[in-house]
Every structure is written in structure tokens, then in C-alpha cells.
Image 1: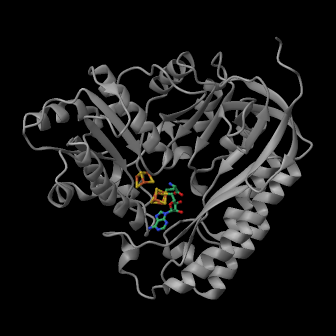
Image 2: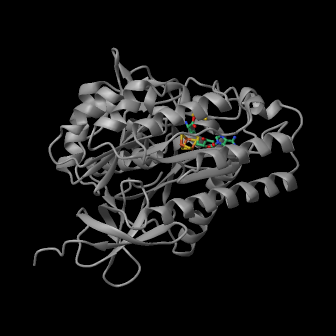
Image 3: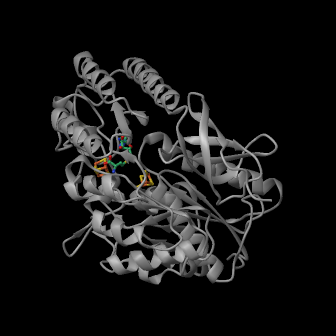
Length: 438
Ligand code: SAH
Ligand code: SF4
Ligand code: F3S
């Protein structure tokens, strides 16, 4: 038995949806009377975990060990809850291996306060159910958020790419209802948001009775006080013309598109079950650029998928050259238990994977720096999100999702008109064009 926790700390790993879930769990516990604290003081630590690659999963176990050791030195033994995708995938395994108090999956976290109470009473507290009714209705209203907020509109995935755990950890794809999303967006604006990023594993597949993501975006564009809209992550096969047109027509929709391709080789894309080839992906990007010529493109890549040859990898490099991404993420393939790819032959040797990742990242870094250099001289708005490292320096985002440093007396949440004056590899310097009224 442990006494019921009075303070809590949530630590989120992985994707933006986990960040969103972490905020919602914190709101739930605050509504239950608990107070937020640093990890080193909290009676309850929630690790909101990611299962996407092996390293992410192992990190959870080492984090639990470190947490226990540090607390033990202070004579404390905080309650530990494991939430997120590792909780879903490993379930009771985590209790057996790491003796944690609570395990709760991504579709069950609205039960977290009840599970914590159970654990405090010395009972087993594990819930990895995926109930047909969604958790969203059981969550408290949004109260305080930063200028840039996340809003989950769709969750889960039915695509079953052969390397990926998400369909197993997040469950089948569901879209939240139109009205519930608009209501949450309104609450987010009241709570301080000026920019909202709509989230879903395949966000562009969002659908409510024939209404698509572009209809939702057009409705949110009219919300007073909301200046910017973004959405992520999109799947190439769900990119409809209505959404592409929205990029040309909806003022608050930012010129940025994260559209993962994973590989430039049609043969590997087939083995990944991606259901798009190299050529139709490139043609799709042509249509997006025709609608919004200044759009910043982003992607995800996996190197070293089983059977990837030098020629396949050369196709990936040539696709990168052809697209000219403004930014992108790239990963070494990591076999995940239970996925079809984990049983595939022709593993790529680690040294080859390392070398390919280095070459790919060099190419992506070169293109990102080039995109940033090409932005110098542009005037744009920067949404200030936090303080920079230097005194008087603030940090925000351009419409193209570049980090921009701005000097001056600007507050978090301000939208500052700047001229982009200088570019580094991963950020820019902006000079405010109109001095803020005293
Ligand atoms: N829904 C998105 C992304 C989901 S996961 C999409 O369909 O693209 C985020 C990224 O992690 C993926 O785009 C992929 O690049 C990477 N990823 C997923 N599984 C992986 C694995 N087993 N090994 C390495 N990278 C992986
Ligand atoms: Fe994973 Fe593919 Fe679904 Fe993306 S589309 S979440 S990579 S299975
Ligand atoms: Fe990780 Fe789950 Fe997101 S596996 S990437 S936290 S959907």
C-alpha cells in the first residue's frame, strides 16, 4: 500500500500525439486534485512512452531504473505509471519486468485517476482496453495552453505498413466528430492558443460523414483569435484535391506539409506495404507545389529496411535531390516484435545502415540549409513561443515551421512581423519590422 499521491509529473516521449495525451493526462489529474511537480519531487511519475523503435522502448526501462535510484537516494519511492504505446504493447510484461504500479494504454488513460487510486489501495492497476466508445468525452475542458497547441482529431491506423507498431498500439483508425473538434479548438483559443496543429497518425484521412479534413480546416479558419492552422501526419494516399486546394485558399493554413515517403525505391515501398510508389508520390508533390508554390515540404525516411540494396538506397537519395525537403526525419530500420517486416530475410548489416543514414542525413541537412538560405530577405510573421538563450532574445516559428530568433521586447504568444535576415543550418534570425508600441 502507498498513500494516494498528492503531486504528479508527466514525462512524454515519442510523437506529438503523445505530447497531446500527456497534457490531457495532466489536466485529468489536476481536475482530480493533484498538483503538478518536478519529476524529482512528484509522488506519482507518469512515463508516457513510445514503442516505435527499439531504442525508444529500452529507454523506458532505463528511465524507470534511474527514477527509482534517484528517488531512493532521497528516501522516496514514488508511484510509477507507464502510459503510452509501450504500455499498450507490453501490458503486464512491464509490471513483471519493472514492478511499476500502473499500466495504462493510449485508449484507456481517461481511467488514470481511478487506476492510481486502485494502486494506492494495493490493487493491480492495468488497463489496456480499447473500448469502442472514445476516451475524449471523458476528459476535462482545456484550460491553459501555450501559443501553439496540439489537437488530436483522428487516431489509430489501418494501413499496416510492414515495419510499424502503430496499428497495434493505437488501434483502428477513428475520426473524432466535427463538432467536438470545433468545440475543443474554441476552448484552446480561450486557453491561449494562437496556432493549432491538428493531429492524427493519418490526419488527412479524417472524415465525418463525408466531410474531409479540408472542410474542418475551413471551419476552423473562421474561429476568432486563431491565427494559424497546421496538420500532421499525412499519408500520401489520403491527400485529396480538396486539401491541396485549401493550401491555395485558406489564409490561416500554413505553407507546410509533412508527407512521409519512407523510401525512394518503389520495390522497397511495396515490401513496406506503403501503397504509394515513387512516381505517384512525386506527382502528388507537383500538385501540392502547383497549389502553393512556397510550401515547405517535410518527410520521414527509413534506411536499411530488409532487402534494401545499394540501388534502392540510391533511389532514396535521388528522390531527396528531386524534392528538396525543407526538413525531414530519418531513421535506421528497427525490427519491431509482431510486425511482418521483423520476420523478413535479407537484413541489412548495421555498418551499412550506419553509412546510409549518414549519407542521407548529409543530403537532408544540405537541403534544409539551402531552404533556410533561400528564405533570407523574406518578410513574414513569427509566432513567439519561448525565450531564447541570449538575454532579450525570443524564439518563434515562421509560417514554414523554421525556428526564428528575434531580439526585442516581445511576449510569448505575440505575432511579430520580421524580415528574415540571416540563416543557419537549422534556424534563422529575424529582425522585427515594426517596433512594438511602448
Ligand atoms: N503515420 C506516419 C508516421 C508514424 S511513425 C506515417 O505513416 O508516415 C513516425 C515515423 O517513424 C515513420 O514515418 C517512420 O519513418 C518511422 N518508423 C516507424 N516504424 C519504424 C521502424 N520499425 N523502424 C524505423 N523507423 C520507423
Ligand atoms: Fe505506421 Fe504506416 Fe500507419 Fe504510418 S501509415 S502509422 S507508418 S502503419
Ligand atoms: Fe511512438 Fe506511439 Fe507515437 S509508438 S510515435 S508514441 S503513436
